[in-house]
Each structure stands twice: as C-alpha cells, then as structure tokens.
Amino acid sequence: FTVNVTDGARYWFPCHDVLADKATVRMRVEGPAGWVVAAPGVLEGTETMGDRATWTWSADFPITPYLIHFSLGQYEVRREEHDGVPFEYYLLPGSWERGGEALFAHAPQAIELLVGRYGAYPFPKVAFDEIDLGGAVEQPSCVSIGSQIIQAGDQYDEVIAHEMAHMWFQG
Image (cartoon, rainbow, N blue to C red; front, side, top):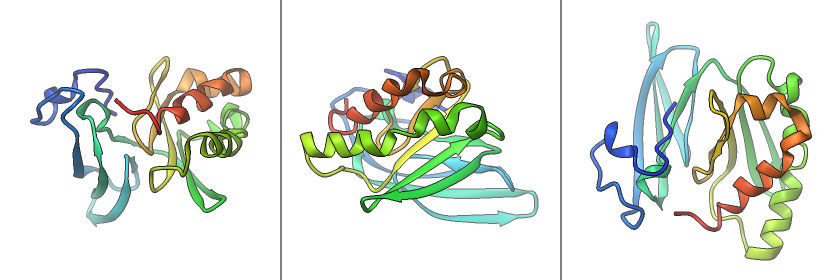
C-alpha cells in the first residue's frame, strides 16, 4: 500500500509534491493474480496473464499528490449501495467478522448526514481499504483504515465520520 501524508508521493512517482498542485490520475498497478487493488476513482479494468494481473484505475477529479494512493492485497471485497452511492469495503480475510461489520455499520448514515450539510457526495464511490497502519488516511473516494481500528469494531466509528468529512474538504 502507499501512504504519502503529506509529502511522500514524490518517492514513488514523479510529481510536484505540494498541496496546491492537484491532478487527475490514471494508474496501472501490477501484482499477483487473485489479489485485489483498491484506489481512488473507478476501476477501468483488470488484465490477467498467467500468475500476474494488472489493474487500471482512473480518477477524473483533481487529487493532491499526497492523496494519490493504491493498496494491493488478498482482500475480501464487499459492495453495497445506499441512496445511489456505491460503497466498497476492501478488507483482509476475516476482518469483516472481527470488527469491520460493526465499524462500518454507520458509514451510510455518516454520508447521509454529511450530504445534508455540505451537498452531494463529490466522488463516484465510498470505499475503505484495510492497511497495516495505526490510523486512517482520507484519500478521495478510497479511505485507508488501519487494521487496529477495524479490529476494535464500533469503538472507533467516529473515525469513519471524520474521514468521510474530508471528502468535502480535501488538501
């Protein structure tokens, strides 16, 4: 996975790594076939050749370099829709049962509250990807959540609302 907060993007792709220099993004990520990639924007497609796969993601909205992100793992993916907004959860095996279901139970209500306050949800999806991190990072349309937070279940459900509020107020 990548975490660039707040000036780490320059270490894995060429960019002008400052908050004000936003860009749209199209990225291709290669990894083991059978794994899954989570990223901001929309998955354009996946190509598999032998034991390798390539995922192409695009974000047609401007992103600050530190929020350009992907994670690659043996994720179990859950998809649902709430009020016309797709929700995607990219969690490691067993994490849904070990706390993910409780943690994310109020995510649709958080979005509903924020939409009522700030206007239409500005991205094509709401997604969460699990990473080995002690916190959370607000990439647009694909928030990274640390395994420790997920395993704590609803003890940290305010983190979900906090990260979702960033969708209207990005760097």
